[in-house]
Image (cartoon, rainbow, N blue to C red; front, side, top):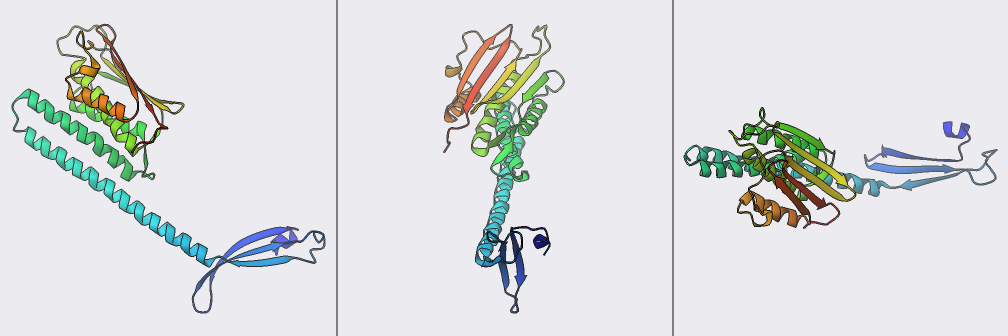
Amino acid sequence: MRKIREKSYFYEVEVDFRVYDNTRLNIKIRWSVPPGFESSLSSVIVTLLDFTEIKSAERKLQLSLDEKEVMLKEIHHRVKNNLQVISSLLSMQSDYVQDKQSLSVFIESQNRLRTMSMIHEELYQSENLGKIQYSVYIEKLLNQLFQVYGKSDSVVLVTVLESLDITINRAIPIGLIINELVSNSLKYAFPEGESITRKPELRITLSKLDENLEMRIEDNGIGMPFGFDLEDSNSLGLKLVNILVRQLGGKIDFSSDSKRGTQFKIHIPLAVNLI
């Protein structure tokens, strides 16, 4: 009646109610004034549309989506827990390892497992189960690595991270790439006893340019050994970086010297469909 008093010429409302046998009905009531009767409102057209079945289908679909979301969260949670169990087993086993090189292999394996585990943790805690807020994840990953290698006080960490949502099929390999390159810098760029006049610094930059993700991982350490070839490296970590960049359809640029340190610049296309 209020709409009639306001001289409204079209009005639509959805009504949800139950009839005598407790059946739930969804009715759409549509009220309109035909041309020529706008002033007097002496003629109106009222239509009733029963869209109960449509509403019922929507409710069932929403229920199904909610159930799938709960299940997907549980899957991410279990994957994270399983990865943490494996990491814990490696940690326990490493207590019995005396050789420093072998112990380093255990630590590197644990770091890779944590890198993947943290992705699944971010996903099941997120409202969006298909993507994660990547800058938040990277900050957590970097803090973890600095603690593992005991560099929190000796190396300055500088991050320039654009706020980006990244899908899981890219998030895990990119996380592993960052893990390997940052670990490499923390282990080798600033050796104890080496005479370096500048304050040790590691800089991580993440940005989106057009449909490409650009990552920069730069340190001002002692640089790579003379004659180092990234494509022909014997390091498992750097081999893994090359493999993952290729899988993502990206490219990696590398430079290093004793005066400026080491710089990795990685471009990854975001528009390419990944299997």
